[in-house]
Length: 35
Image 1 (spheres, rainbow, N blue to C red):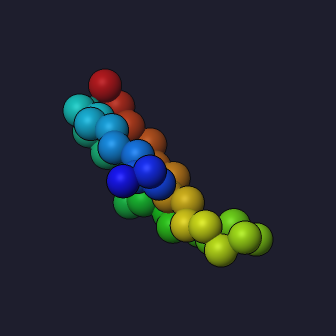
Image 2: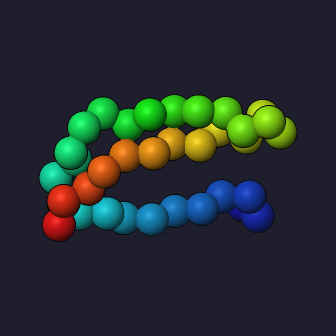
């Protein structure tokens, strides 16, 4: 699985995630996290 990244985040989500696509078509998610 060369192109797979995995991370575990523990906390409270501040708001819903925003999903965008870069010019190359790669998806990018952004969200806030309170720890």
